[in-house]
Amino acid sequence: MADIIDIVMQEHREVEALFDQLKAATGADQQQPLFTEVKDKLERHASAEERVLYPRIRKEVPDGKEEAEDAVEEHDQMRSSIEEVEEHEAGTELFMLAVEQLVATTRHHVGVEEQELLPDFREHSEAEERQALAERFEQAKRRGNGSGGSPEGDGATKQELYDRAREAGIVGRSSMSRKELLAALDKQS
Ligand SMILES: [Fe+2]
Ligand SMILES: [Fe+2]
Image (cartoon, rainbow, N blue to C red; front, side, top):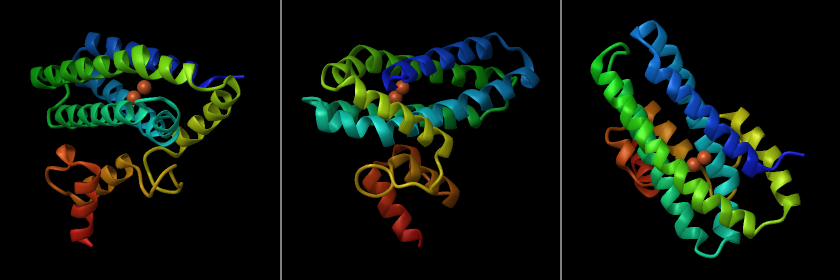
């Protein structure tokens, strides 16, 4: 049976392979669909980690609270980098520069996860638990970033709040904390 750590690492490799293809792609016709694919994969991956994996790290790993908080910050940097790419037309130099920034941001975060978070979690969890989490991780990914499921912990995940802010057109959302997103959304309604 699958283990959530193996699934997370496998997806990191898939994202890296997509990044390699994207960097080698020429012209908007090749670049745009690859970017859309990697963006969707990254967003689902990060959101599923925030719902299923990080709450366990917070609870079970000593210093896990800080580790998970930093990791969510890094996800937000990735989300900002994705937005930055979307501000440019595929096929342009600025688009590829923004892609390179996204690759660097993601590479850093993947390194932290694979060298710190995942080994720490492995040390402080049982194989059985990680197998059960693997299933929940897949479910969370299928659900994507939208609503329709209650995340572990209190209320909406940061990703959900961020998505609502994007739909509402809230300016400056990518640099907002979860609390600020809640406040901004509250003001809107
Ligand atoms: Fe990850
Ligand atoms: Fe992550």
